[in-house]
Image (spheres, rainbow, N blue to C red):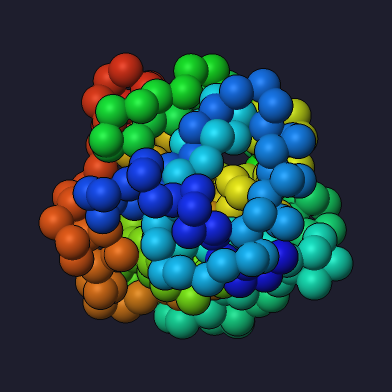
Length: 233
Ligand SMILES: Nc1nc2c(c(=O)[nH]1)N[C@H]1C(S)=C(S)[C@@H](COP(=O)(O)O)O[C@H]1N2
Ligand SMILES: [Mo]
């Protein structure tokens, strides 16, 4: 369902504010996600969407859900590195996994408690490319073609910042930004870029991310409630 537009009828009546798309949650998440494809393929507005999926609200600034098969998925690390590297999903899964159970909190107020995450440290991925001395940080790009984020190198190297391929013990669904999304545990959800495709190491401060240019803080620390700590955990 690459680029599948979200149905206008679903969106209208729920929005009106022009805010980001949200999908609300119940236990029927899998069914709903499967049901989304036929619903969303009928209509193509640029609206941000509102759907129920799991315990989360699903955001997509493009107004569409995006997907890539496990086999076709690639993660590219480039920019200010010794050697650009491309990872397949299998490459990522062959690396030492990191598991953690932590909350997910959107800056707009909703919070999902005790989410089980599995992935690899962004730091480990960066190390395979070899970040050059003096790098400022990373710019992250999504294969949705629109969303971007940034992290300083210190933030990117934290043990609780992972390239996630499982949420709640299942592969990250297309709605949640699978097959691979970022999870930045100590920061608000907008840092956790979905449909992650490219990590560009930047020598100089990177252009601000999608929401940051629209007024959000670049440093999105949640606070102590989610294990925020000045030292990497
Ligand atoms: N590509 C992409 N990533 C994104 C967003 C988005 O719209 N597009 N929204 C962000 C915001 S504001 C939040 S709160 C979380 C929501 O994650 P979820 O859709 O899995 O609940 O994704 C973040 N990452
Ligand atoms: Mo958010």
